[in-house]
Image (cartoon, rainbow, N blue to C red; front, side, top):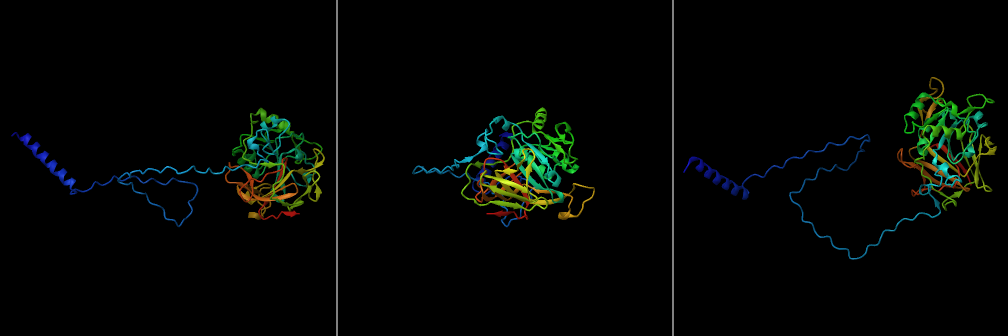
Length: 409
């Protein structure tokens, strides 16, 4: 026998014996290959503590279980009922011919193709006597500013107004409001920190600031500045169109309407809002079915049409108000923290807060919700259902959480 052949025979016999021992359990089991434990993904939101233990990785079974046959159903399952919408609701999201701001169908449907204008209007004692164009706005938002005053942000889409003003500077709340309506913000100017926030926002590429677009505004020489700046909405929309901004709005406001009020209301003939300067009162007028506005103890007259300011809906929204370090007037802060009288006020219109809807001589209690910045802004009841507004214009009265709104039955 040749040496190489003998060596091969012995190697073959050794391999056979080793295989036999392994088959009888005499050899060690192979060690499984360890798997890489994934690293946790970083997040900006801290993980809240919990008493529930963190589960460990479940080991992969060494065998594949044999699937069992799923028994055939013995009968026809009963389908779940499909929720039905109230046929009396007017839902602009389902009909492009209805205004999402008023719930009305304008005679000229093309006005709903233009981007809304959010125009900032002064509301101190002198400006109050010169205000014009408020009755043509679809929505007016009144909110607190420094020195205990309020200022208005008026939304226009359905109607034109040849004279709107007096137009003044923007405030921090205007970082939030144009997003809700996908509006072009029109204002006179602002302190630099507020301007930077506006131009850095999601609508920063469609801002119409008078300081940079003076030809779109005009001054009334019979009055002294600063409360003598006005605008014609037709001129503003021409400028917006020329800039390529006049597009169909894609705002996040989500409102529903109904001709008849819901059955869940309580009687309300008037409401009073105790703003420190020019306190507001709304009185329901059964003859017109509208709310009439007074401010500072006097009827609030719109010089544009010489009529008392009125609304189909008055909505109170309570939100957290925080004084910031931004100084609106002067070079130094006058007071500290919440006592600073010339500091800009941040009104936190995100999350949720109490709301009251006043329509048809009734009040409906609920809340406003906006879970995220780009989430729909809605008015809902305790069951999370939308509270329908009356078709027509609305006034939003934004108040601090601690402010008590008085309702008269």
